[in-house]
Amino acid sequence: MSLNLNKKILIMIPALNPSNNLEDYINELISNNFENILLINDGSDENHREIFEKLKLKKECTLIVHSVNEGKGKALKDGLKYFKELKNFNDFLGVITVDSDGQHLVSDVKKIAEAMEKNQNALILGARDFSEKNIPPKSSFGNKLTSNVFKVLYGTKISDTQTGLRGIPNSLIEEFSHISGNRFEYETNMLIECILNKIEMVEIPITTVYIDNNSGTSFRPIHDSISIYWKILNSFIKYSVVSIISCVIDLLLFQLFLMNLKFNLTDTAVIVIATVLARIISSLVNYILNKKYSFNSKKNVKNTIVKYYILCLIAMIASASLVSIIYNFTKIPEVAIKIVVDTIIFFINYRVQRVFIFNK
Image 1 (cartoon, rainbow, N blue to C red):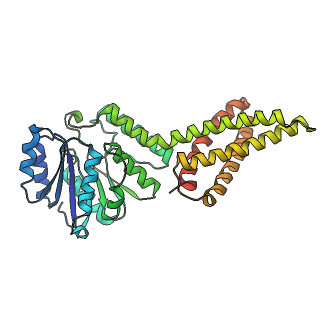
Image 2 (tube, helix red, strand yellow; image 1 turned 30 degrees about the vertical axis):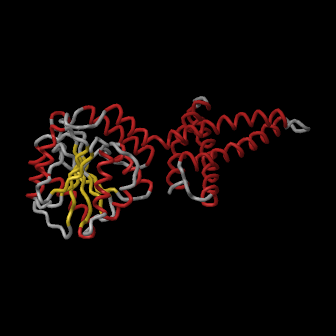
């Protein structure tokens, strides 16, 4: 398949102690008309210096060197910053990031390049098929789990969240060069940034290749997995903590009002007034904390508070209605039904608040 694009592509390869096969891989890229290659030596040891010295002599290659290992995310961001400062920046479609371990076939790099030409405002993702038999179990399980978490929390299905083969068009270079994260979590943050800012993501099926059971990766299973999942779950964890705080405040205020609203009111009236007053205050606390803490929203109060209270009203009506309907059909204890129903509503509320109320 010959590559025939109207503009050039920069191939960006972050590398830490790569194998000698890297030279062969870059030669194959060059022979397939990828003639602009940026190689980032991310703190490789002295034993690998010769590889980089040979590669930087190629006219198609430019080398950036980190004196110490700063992480894949930092290498990618330094590469993006280098790219956006090129005088002939507008001669390019964008950047394709490629891993240095040879697991991205040049034929698949071509697929990403062609997809970039058709989708010049979208992030292009090379998606592996994790149902294939040759996938290491831990890689298959990890990707499927992360994909499902994305689906639940963000409402977006991404079949390969950890792919290193990505096409970043010129229109996204500036934004992506400032995304947080210096290691593998940077690539996760890139996906979250697209979701929050409604940037289209296009998945292109690619060949799944694992060399020596993926032994060449610099991915640290425990440390990097924790970093990635913290980035994915960060907002939801904060949302959950805020919900617990709001619930405690609601109960304490309810008790306080019960003790101080006696007067000449009936017990029923006291309970109703105490419930309403406690809920008004606790929901306002919940709104403020979610806006500033959980979702870090810069939108003004006028644009969000009405939507927030409409959501609260809908959630309350939905909870009462569903518990009543399910109880009448099943006769399962109401409390058990309410726990299940309110848990589902809890997740739905998170999605609605993130996407429609406190979105950027």
